Image (tube, rainbow, N blue to C red; front, top):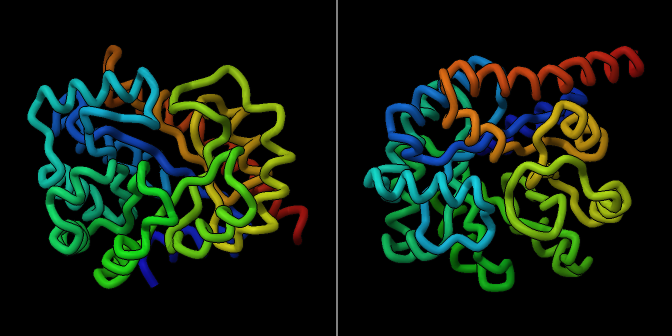
Length: 270
């Protein structure tokens, strides 16, 4: 089994919740991204998403857009991001490449999939690829042993949700609210109701992201999903004083409630 799916299934079977952290490759520079990943691993993250900077993002909010611009200005490219992701994966944590489709097509599906897998990458999320158009992409990723991740959102129909689940061999990434990435002061008031309905269609691991930035939000999402994805507030940590310690400290603050939550759940089951 692919190590990404294996990690998520193992956590799921034990009643634990997964914490997925996002970093932009090359922001503020390649060396800092790598060191930040090591600090995140030290903090206890389960999976790291490595973003590939793109000049025309559609799913990313202001924080990640600014992060992309800094990374692009520093010369980050898809091949360099793949190599960086592989270095991070070498430390024993599954790595997912978070990218847009155009850079993959420019490289070529098979070349991309082969290089990503050989580097140690576990999975790929092409955020602007519609699931209905993903058959060839899905087959190429699967042939090279890469897990696939697809997005679902509050506007995803039940039929489309079933399709997303069937082609997501890593996990289904549920967008917690309509809009783009970015920290929010509160979760969507309809999220709990939505996830009850989503659970009826999604059989594989279900992780929720977009807008999650506080320990309270992490716990609330953990009660409804298999994992939590946090990005913008971690990206912001790298652009303040003492960035590496700041990002590890922030990750620990967000992961700690999951560890306490898991202990409570285990006690209830015993």
